[in-house]
Length: 86
Image 1: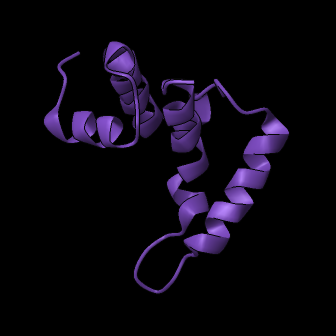
Image 2: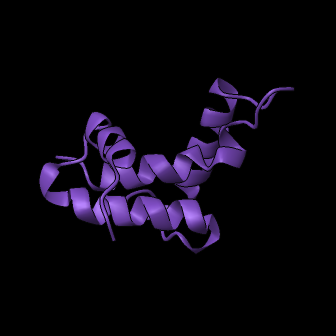
């Protein structure tokens, strides 16, 4: 898979280790393609549910765009945290 600049910058900006960048980018593309197939890497299912609810409170859906829940923000956070330094 080719590394695209936009995803690379987003992952690096979020704190993903450079050593993990290729794997994280592949996971980000897989998440974007099929969020239902994503396997949590860092958070438990219960923690992810809580994170999903909190993210939706911060970024709720409105007339112009979907909220954090529909955008699967909690899964993206899981991916970034799993590939970030301790």
